[in-house]
Length: 85
Image (tube, rainbow, N blue to C red):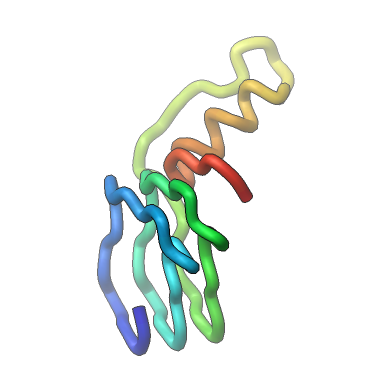
């Protein structure tokens, strides 16, 4: 994605690429709940400001602390499933 603005990328499988998502000089895009699978690098972003967020709400703090299970849930809801970093 180059020189792109005001796009929404959601519920997408980004797989088997050098970069799952390549962002270059792109701003004000909303990117969430995507699946990054078997990419050499999952994301490349240069000179870009975008929103990586989910509109879903969830209760991650069921035991009044953040633990590794909560981190995994947060990563899924914010970025989608990521099989490697």
